[in-house]
Length: 376
Image (cartoon, rainbow, N blue to C red):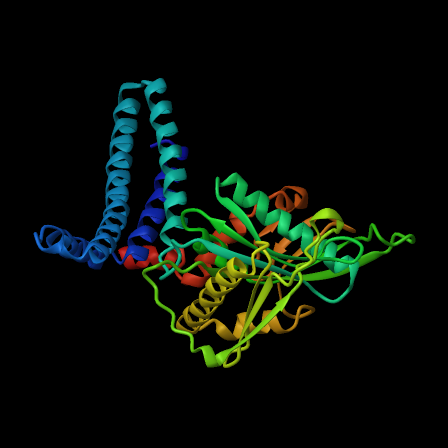
């Protein structure tokens, strides 16, 4: 068989093995059979919420299994067609089949990444918070650049965005901001972005044009839905109201409509200035607080709490997850996975999927070779 087809065959086989490993194939088939049986129970819909949850899980699992099975059939058909075409000397048909294999290889790669989004809240919407580190205007400008990067990433995916809270810098940029990202698997994709991000560039605010290093932190947590209940003792809450900051003029906030909750046992803080109504901001801030407490519990279960908390407590050297170097050379490097990109402009315009996919794979901890060994 021609070399390009052999290479694609190997690449696809490794990807399919990884998909099966991530799905825990035999267990997934057993679970689907069990869910199918439950879905046929005539008493299922007497409890609508439970029935909808069951059907969501059933449909999700069925789509994953059927996707792998369809890919395996299509790949087998393409390989057989290549062998027949080569035997008959039909180059055009062989080329068309190889093109199909390339399409299947891309689909396998896409499904590999999607298969990593299997966490408890990965399918939920997300809150994304950006905070400037020490360094005044430089760090605040960098924080605003990061916020734009995630905004552009979300827009390219067709996600909906809403600004929940923002504190502007004195001269430029932002001190902090929180956005809600709404769309399929928003939290699953964004969760590995939590950490400190480092920028190296020639400062646009320095008359001497010196190179500066700036830091900003990103914190991501899931929006919790009605199926998840979080109990908060009112005695554990400290509530503050404040005037929302703004640019001034006729729309300046003259009332204390901003609301900030502090959960005393954990130190978790949630604030909202999204609405001019204190009542609405109180409801939004409470939703955010519940979401943060839920994410805190998720991180404990995933045994990554220490790493994330270290990134939150010290926005500076030794805690960064990614470096963005604009001077003296052009490079963005993820310090956890080693993934590098030589086009910072594209990265800062939202091209960050490769970084996310690599970090997701690292978190799961299964390599292609390990998956292939399991398949054998």
